[in-house]
Image (cartoon, rainbow, N blue to C red; front, top):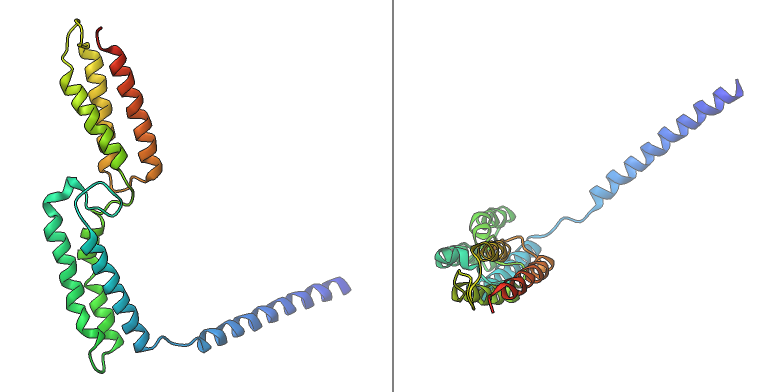
Length: 201
């Protein structure tokens, strides 16, 4: 009987404790300071300044932060499109009596143009891989198929061409990170050595 009473008491205390925690949590949420219009304005200004600097520094290339070659035809459209919506929101920074709703609405216009631009910006440096690809392509092109000196079999050439194509895929992918670049360079370099060793003497 005593054990039942103790169990009931434990359950009661547990429920009470949970209620106290819940009330305390609600009070904390209610006490949390609301962000001011000035803070929204400051964040907006910092974001616009930062993003415009990123776009201004962006060039077509293979370095981190460069616009990818595979989408070079879209470079002007995507960069100017993003800057256009950023500039359109800039007057809100100095507008008297600007509202939070106006700022939030302007931020929503950044989404599509920003996505188009950023999805075509490299997140890692692919220059070592690109340089090796250029070297391998030149070697592959300069080496004819055949059985004599300075030539390779069609099988060897086909295999080397396939490895170069794989390396290009890694080079051009938006999701490629530094580790992938290192791995792709190592693999392509190995294929290059195998190809060179197969050239007729």
